[in-house]
Amino acid sequence: MTCRRLFSRQLILLLILVLLSGCLRRPAATIITGELHGENFWQGQVLLRGDVVLHEAASLTIAPGTQVLFLPPLAGEDRLTEHPYFPGSELIVRGRLKAAGSPQAPIIFRASEPAAGPGSWGGLNIEDSEQAVFSFCRFQQSDSAIHARRSWISVRHSWFEHNLVGIRFHDSDILIENNLLQNNQAAIRFHFGSPVIRNNEIRDNQKGLFITSAPWGYRIGNNSFIDNYPYQVSLGEGVMQDVELGNNYWSERAGDLLEKRFYDGRLDEWLGVINYRPVLEQAAPGAGIRWNR
Image (cartoon, rainbow, N blue to C red; front, side, top):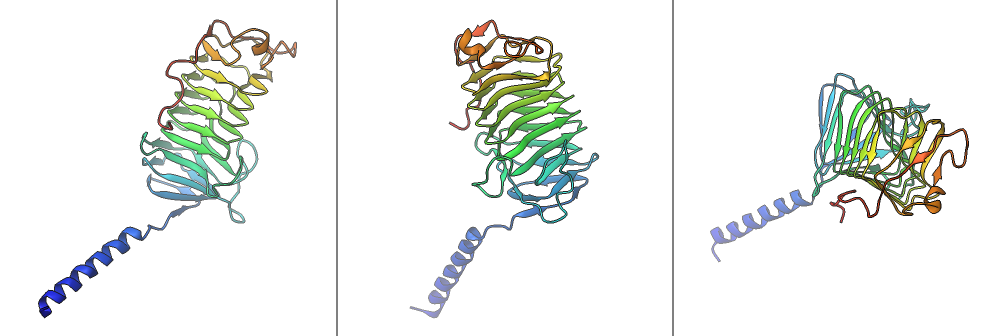
């Protein structure tokens, strides 16, 4: 074998080893703390620690396939723990946020420890935001995955699982459409507000829908409420008017068995009554998500 041929083979082998090492080396995850200003773009794996605040004049775009993982805060980093904030690391959104995943590459929001339980991180605390848009996202292990106040929110084609509360809001314009809310303590909880809640699959939660005070201008229809126990819907002490929830599907269909799954004026005379008729006889067509199947 000539020296030139031997040198060529050694060079090729060296190039292959360099390429392989580049493929095997994972880029270091970004750790985010403190405040975010200006225009921000996240992709890959992003670690949040403590109370991270998106400034009111700032924006954040999260790319499809991004994993946003919440680490336990270090000493002094969990500055906001009293309501309306939560203990643990959280993202406080005062600017504009766009988290648009895809069926092939959803955006993941969860605790950094895969085996952590519900309430292991605070949530996405959205306050006075002009726009926060979520699609094809998955939320796990939070106190309140999305908590919105006085904001404009769209939540579509997303999956909420193993949270204390999936979606929680008050005084917000919010669209909740084509989501799966499963195995949470409460799937959707709101205090005041005029939500549009349609085409969702709400199943196996302790409370499917929890209305704590005076709903108005709401539209809640074409949802499938399946096996939420003990309550498909629960009214809080501030709901003294009747609540219209016709044109939804209920796993108990109708009658006494279903009405036992309502905490309303049937159990507490001070509360309004849930009017659930007419009912959909079959699971709401097109409700829920399809990308997880």
